[in-house]
Length: 83
Image (tube, rainbow, N blue to C red):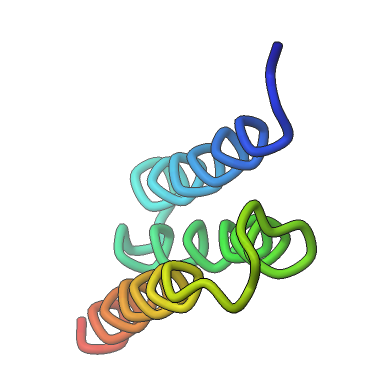
């Protein structure tokens, strides 16, 4: 049986893959497409982390996951802007 969080993972992967395809198949730079896919995937991350968390929000692993995800987005954003 596919759980709610499995669907969230598929949504995240689909958004990132869509961003990659956007960057490869269109005139949009690859980094920009990847960044757009990651921003879109953030909607799924937000839903899984804050609206329907698998762990209590006071768990330090929740904060660590949020920090790592947003740090990755920041690196992608800087890469897209610098190019």
